[in-house]
Amino acid sequence: MSVIDLRGVADFSANPYPYYAKMRAEGPAHLVRTDDFERVWLIVGYEEARAVLSDQRFSKDWRTIERFTASSNPINANMLETDAPHHTRLRKLVAREFTARRIESMRPRVEQITSDLLDAMVPAGSADLIDALAFPLPMTVICELLGVPDIDRDAFRLLSNAIVTPLSPEKESEAVHAMGAYLDELIEDKRCAPGDDLMSALIQARDDEGDRLSPDELIGMAFLLLVAGHETTVNLISNGVRALLDHPEQLALLRTEPELIDGAVEEMLRYDGPVGTATFRFTREPVQVGPVVIPRGEAVLVALGSGDRDPGRYPDPDTFDIRRAAQGHLAFGHGIHFCLGAPLARMEGRVAIRALLERCPALVRDPDGGEPDWLPGLLLRGVRRLPVRW
Image (cartoon, rainbow, N blue to C red; front, side, top):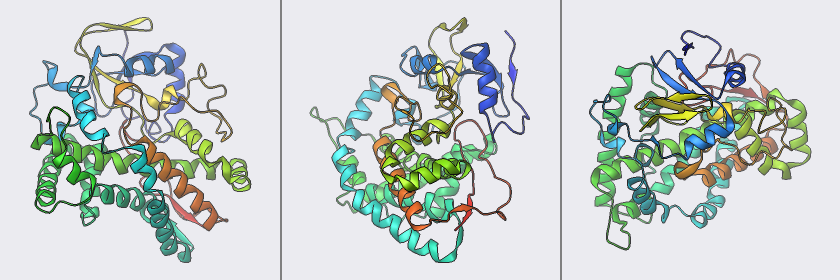
């Protein structure tokens, strides 16, 4: 079959959805070439995406695939890069410390952090919304949850960005090793001075059989919680606000009926979610997806954003409608790797966007803000800056 070449397609990062629509019209799975990958399978249909995300024939552990021989780093010892039963074991150890009750108990603190950030932002009359709100809110929340409030956030942000939106394989490798060393020191400090926080609990956590996280698994878990705990929520907030500003009638509706915020956030996640594709999967054996058979040992990406624009699942999918019943979207994945932090991300998004609209009733894009600087690559969906004024 032919390979779809996405190399050098300048507007793909800005708006991948027309490209996904064309692919879906031709089939649910395609072999593509991108600026980052010479060969990768892309799953673009909603039903096929759900099926692949829950199909154990697609491995998350690249170390089980013969042609991937690169050495791993302790940050790779995380749940996103493991399969059952190892994944089940890791998730069990952390899930008991990451409960819905604990998340809901954080709401007053999330509201307070949001209020403090808006107090600092609003008098200026304009701001980069990402630097002023969308980044510091989830970063502060996840650091306080883990018990690392004194983290060097600027340094961590640079390392995190270099890993999830790498500019080159060399820069990514450097960032991975630096992140591993950074988290190793962070965990050692927390081991020496434990507190009433999630990181201390994870260091001490044992299941009923006495199992606990190994040193490498602690680094991997800290990496996953810190990076996934803020990167996706940054884009949830900024993409959601962008969608509202691009659809003034929907913005006006939400201002008139703020009780629609829960459904509005779900539509934001569906319409332009924070994650473009799920992380890599690898076929353990030949697997048929639609009319094509993906051979054994192939790299596969599930295009979450494409599945959520599939007209077979959502009528008129390119329309942003905060009254839509958007439940069932793929923004947080599906199956055993469904995002553990989804309730926290949802709660932060609802609090932040509702408070922003209340405090900034004249919110608009800053006309002097320049062109959007889109995040590179397929993994994350968003912009580096969001200049606004009110």
